[in-house]
Image: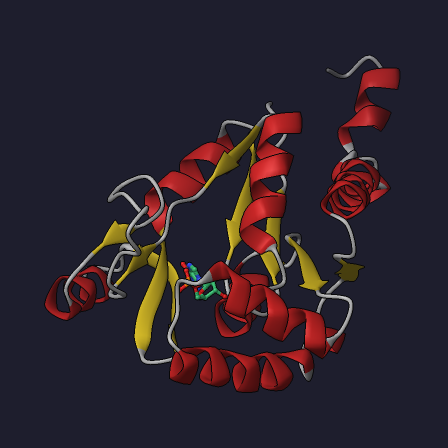
Length: 202
Ligand code: 5GP
């Protein structure tokens, strides 16, 4: 029987660098990256079906009603959710899957998949977070302030995560996450079939 893939859930305040780190992770290893659905308007460089599946509020509600989402949450006035089919298919195929989602969704996933690995990515400090959000230039001042406020709230949930990684440099944070993933795949609880191999049962 094929071993299930590992579900890696990365959260962290906007501006913590999640997007960049996830991009690096997928370059270095063969992860399946789940594309979320959202009611947020696309940013200029964003493409439907690449960065997100951009949906109207009505379409999003239909996805919820048809149980097409593994989890969903509201974040700063918009809805975001993880399409169920892709994630379950990939895990069953033995593929490791990354979700880049906010805290409420991550905690919902942990209930459904207790074996999932929750990683919280943080910027080195609050000033750096503000600087990154401003430099990104994709949000107006009010949205930036809302996101900083939200970041402080999210930090309170860090203790519910399995790991915290400080994103000081992209290279180091990426390596740290890969170390976590490698150690997790070697956990005895994920390798119970090894006994059977030695007994010649499989
Ligand atoms: P942004 O608008 O900056 O793309 O995303 C805002 C927040 O929503 C980020 O923290 C991002 O990780 C989170 N997010 C993106 N997709 C999902 C999803 O499918 N579910 C949940 N719960 N959060 C998501």
